[in-house]
Image (cartoon, rainbow, N blue to C red; front, side, top):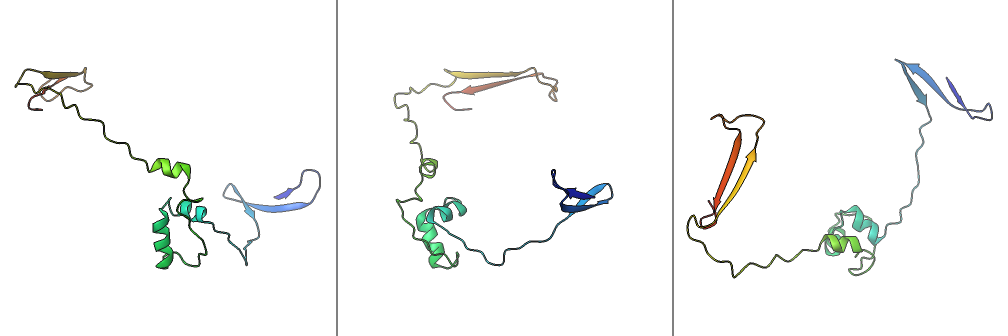
Amino acid sequence: MYVTLKNSQQVVATADLVDGLYWLWTTQRSANVTTSGNSGADLHVRKGHAPVEALRRMITTNMIKDVRVTLNSGGETARRGCRQGKMVQKPFPSNRDKRSYNKSELLQLDICGLMENDSLGGSKYLLLIIDEASGV
């Protein structure tokens, strides 16, 4: 099979039918010379948003080779999304005036059911009872 351009008869590719599939025959292309322009932001993203200090350690210990990048801790690598992702929320304040209860004075009840399968004892519902005083 020949693949041609729509408005001309120029053949741009050839394909063979093999086991019900068309195999497109193309020439293998490769780049013999490449250049790379790494920035601090690119390195930060490629290494999973690692902190600048960790990136510096990787460069100085030759874990990352042939890198000529200046890393600024407050510069372009300190992106808004990266800073927000590392934020930690303070814990909720504890309720200091929570009164202590005697055994069986306050019970938390939860019922679940109708269950799809019966229990070994033949029950169709689950009743959960928690005592506030003991937590059991």
